[in-house]
Length: 490
View 1 (cartoon, one colour):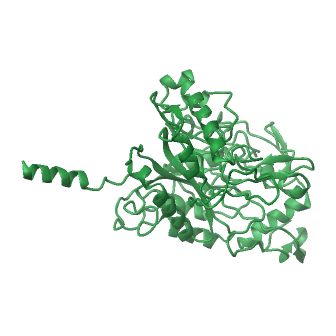
View 2 (view 1 turned 60 degrees about the vertical axis):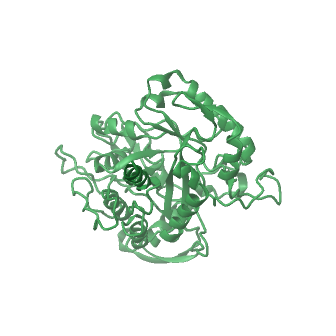
View 3 (view 1 turned 30 degrees about the vertical axis):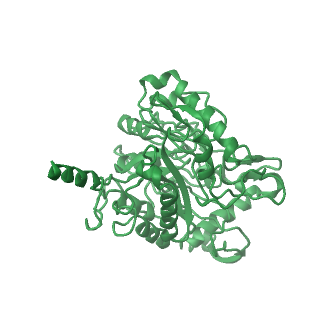
């Protein structure tokens, strides 16, 4: 009996086998680039994707049915703020998770009237929040806890829940540190008040433990332990900074990850991560440093509590500052004008950076996108498992320059049809996998409105014309810092 008891204790004390790391992508560009969604689904490594919304918002009518099925099942909806969803169709998509509020721990508008440059899509009287805190609705964790109770109980009451696979909910996604360093009870819109609430999630936990919620599994509990995952966001100049932040959250919420002291077991999600740079070499190295199996996220002994990682994939973002790194300004570009005329100009601009895993015109993976896929293919639970397996060529085409290079299609191409060009008016083929974007007869696509072009619609004929000097400079800055500006014909 004594020997049996010791054997049982040893078995209970043995570490739980680490689960695979689930890879995903956070992006709202699939609406303009369904071929990017197609590439993601065909890669075989994306277990989930999300777009800061509870609706898919992608025209998939011309995508392969198998791709559509994968895209629907792997979509993770988000209830972004306090506004309850009008449509509960996301319960029938096939996914098991729904995410809660987005970054209520920091206050800031995406557009603030005259304070924001026009080139970034903001109008003169345009005021739009960038986070769920927006204009202070969720910044106070005590108020947010009550809004959370309303949201969770609403989701539990949706009739479709009974027959749905959706049974789990992720907590509000955090941008700031987990350490409680700020007084978050004051309105952040007032002068001389903090705009960041470090420790928001800890305060939120304390408040939600006092409230009762109906979980999505149909059982009542407190409004904290209905949560199955804790998402965080990390933007940094080095992968080590990201890993340090992950370990900070693990330390502060260890009882939740271990499922002790009466807490339900939870996992950590890293749902937004990228590096502030336009240098492709830097991005590729950043992915290596973040995802490797020695001291990165694929070391499941070190990071077994981290269940999901999704890359923040956007084509361009405005000026930014990370730590001691400040945006570049007033740089010299060597331009090649039409007709072969060379020109050197010094341009004043705010640096932009591109973090997209995909090329917007082809849907192919960028160099760091290929590297992310390569690491995601490795589902090792041991740091000694060796290098990741190479990406299958059929799933990840070789990277090409960000041009209008056509995608490969099985249907024959007409030699007389040229790729889409700026200013060209060309008929869409009406078939294929580029519905919802600007189509060209050869299967390539015009640059989307997000890349600085207007009057591109979903009609059978597209007229893509370039707009605004601000967007022009924005595009130049992306090219300039990726080493692709030489010889650009503008």
